[in-house]
Structure formats: C-alpha cells, structure tokens
Image (cartoon, rainbow, N blue to C red; front, side, top):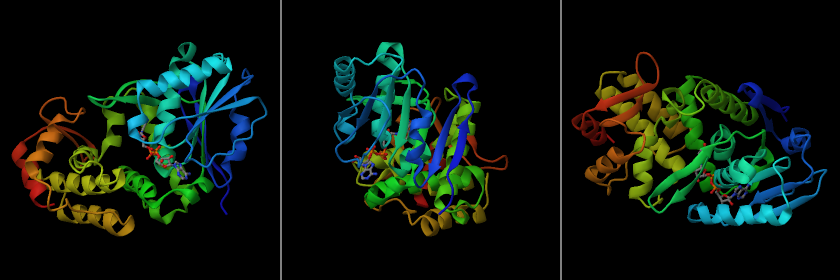
Length: 336
Ligand SMILES: NC(=O)c1ccc[n+]([C@@H]2O[C@H](COP(=O)([O-])OP(=O)(O)OC[C@H]3O[C@@H](n4cnc5c(N)ncnc54)[C@H](O)[C@@H]3O)[C@@H](O)[C@H]2O)c1
C-alpha cells in the first residue's frame, strides 16, 4: 500500500495541506486549528462517517441530493451552530462529497463572518475537485451554485478507504474529472496508482487555484469539457451522471477544436481513447437528444460571456476560446 501524499495549496498565509491516501483520516487531528475548543461535523446519513476528535464534537446531518443544496439548509446548519455555541475560533468539519463541502464551506464562511473549515472528502469527485479550492455555494430555483463565496478550507483529507462504499454511479462522476485532468496535464495519469493519481489531480487543481483564486481565465480551464456536459445534464434531467456528461463533453471539445483547425485527427482520437477506453465513459451524444436544445443550453451557460465560449485544446495547449460560431459548434455536434 502506498504511503500518504501531502499536496500544499499555496495561498500565502492561507496555504493548506491536502492529505491523500489510504488511512489519511488519521491526519485529521493534526490539521485542527490550535484555537478550536469545539467541532461541528457536517455530514449526511448516507456517508459512512466515523470521526474521532480530541475535542467536544457535535454532528449535524443535512439532506441528500441537490434539492437540499439551498439557503434553507444553510439556515438549518447555522441554527445548529448557534445551539452548539460555536464561535469563530472553533472548527467545522465537512465529511462527505461536493454537496456537503459546498454547504459546510458556505456555512463556515458566513458564521460569525467566517470560521475555519476542514474538508474530509468521501467521494472521488470531492477528492479531485469539490473539496479543494474554496468555492462554496448553494442553488436557487433559478440555477445551480448562484449564491456562494470563496472561502478556503484550513485543510483537506482524501482518505481513499472512503471510496469502498461509494456507489459506482458516484465513482463515475469522479472518473470524468480525472479524464479531464489527463488532458490538462498531458500526462499518463493511468500509469499512477490511485493515491498518486488523486494527489496529482489535487496538485493540478492547486496550481490553477493558486494562480487564479477567483476564477479568471486560468481557473476556468478546469471547465474543460463542461460546457456541453452541463447542457447534457440538464437536457437528460441528470439521466447522465456528471462524469458521463463530462466524458462526452471532452470528446465534443476535441471535435470542436478539430473543426476550428486547432488540433488534428490524432488528437481527437486520443480524446476518444482516454475517455472511452481508459475511463470507460461514453464518447457520443445519446441519439435521442436534439442539437437545437443543446445549442440553446450551451449559449446560456454562465461561463459564456460573449457569444459561445469554450475551453479548447490547441497549439498552445488548452485555453479559453471566445466567439465560436454556431455553425462550427453545430458541425462538431454532428460528429458526436
Ligand atoms: N466547490 C467546488 O469547487 C465544486 C466542484 C465540483 C462539484 N461541486 C459540487 O459537488 C456536488 C457533487 O458532489 P459529489 O459528486 O461528491 O456528490 P454528493 O456530495 O451529492 O454525493 C453523492 C452521493 O454519495 C453519497 N456518499 C458520499 N460519500 C459516500 C461514501 N464514501 N460512501 C457511500 N456514499 C457516499 C452522498 O451521501 C450522496 O448521496 C455538486 O453539488 C457540485 O455542484 C463543487
């Protein structure tokens, strides 16, 4: 079994460690802020969670699923903080996937105007993405993640033992993000064991977050494959998992880059092989989905500032490309 790996997210005095590996939870006590006298563990009934801390600990359960990622849940969590008597010198521990870390992070960001939070990621998606980088948010009926804040955790634990109980559908969500990292680095991540691969994904995200904490162009590269993916998730009412949608979105991004003469056929093929063969994700748009619906949804994507904006591969690597014409997008979709 490989040793634990520690990745630093370098943000000056707000820098923090991400500890990755089997049994990483043993490092949690070492991440606690010295000022903490109490801890509030925010989690879900469906998350296997046994946290043993050397200080009085209260457990707060939130609902499961995106319909609970709301301001109402933030209020419920904050009222629990009040009952526990949590101060801004104490600590919140988020134990769960991206949903839990988004809720607990936002609650911590706003409780007494900001208190420490440590993320214990229990899904693959949370480990390689959601738990790192300090984006926290809740949904409104008008859209996903519309209310939130940037609030960095004080530390992150990615204990791979937690993945043993993760349903395969949730595992695939993380696989889609790993396939994305594969292209962002150009490295053969599959050659690494799981600890090293997750740690490498964390370090890629850490570097992008450090370079561009509040999401200008650099951090937006993490959206590679996500423009079509978001449209597919909406149009199928989440019939496709996030990871499956990202897989298709990555292949589409390659087809669009080819359409714009930014990459050659070999590079498109490489996308199909990595997404389909290496990660076992779908590579084509389900035949019953109409191009018009997908086009309309992609145009509405909140990352689109002027016309259609995509993150695309090209001679200078992966970058933001603006003002892509609808006829090129349609031509690329037709090859999907
Ligand atoms: N803040 C960010 O940077 C960021 C990035 C990506 C995604 N997100 C957010 O993350 C959320 C998706 O996260 P997710 O894919 O981790 O889903 P999730 O947190 O909703 O978890 C999926 C399901 O798995 C269960 N679960 C979690 N860990 C488990 C375990 N070890 N064993 C068994 N069941 C377990 C959960 O209870 C839930 O039912 C979305 O709300 C998304 O917006 C945030």
